[in-house]
Length: 261
Image 1 (cartoon, rainbow, N blue to C red):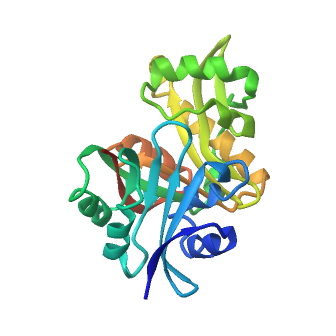
Image 2: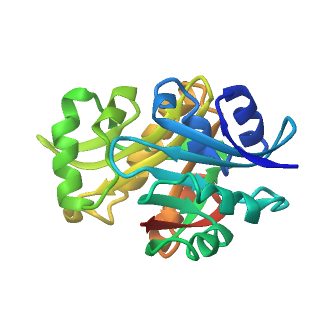
Image 3: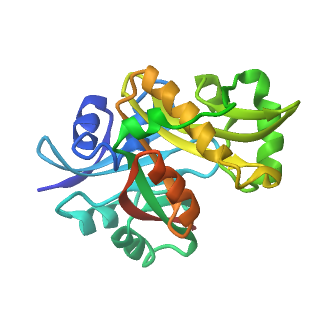
């Protein structure tokens, strides 16, 4: 009989996530020692078999729950019901529709939109794309990144600690950073990366800069040996999805972002 268990065996967690790596880019990346200390894992376990999995990422602010029903949905309702007994009173969540509906019976939810997961399928398209004047950024560029996001992408998920990975690209106009693309998670050990915080200053939009910074970053990730590259994009943002499709990304799954509590 399956039961809810706290999980501590990274190898067992990896084996479950690797069944659908493009769907679980974030979770796989969080197995890296850089992120692992901020994670709490729960599984619906039958004997030695993990049937369902949830990650609670605890970065210091509101915890973030990531969970999606497995391919067959085996034991998912029971898993979510048991999970509600251990979740914090308030948390953000990236969840599929069945999970959202079940959590809605227990928590008050504030929807933050529908999103689409995309995964890089045709790497040749990404590597052939023009990177223009895009360059890789360093820790010295953090303040310039913060200014760009404040102007062009308020409400972003930028974490200055991610710049330490060396996986942020940008385009400069003089002393001003006018476009950038980075990662939310990256792991050379797990060979995964999730692109994020892609934006350009409103004064230069429509000039292809978002595509160029993504192309530069994708070349860098390829050189690092990253095997699986994904991203999350608002379901209604057709323009961004078109840019990503032109770089070789394809849709993988749909999910919702909700603040619960």
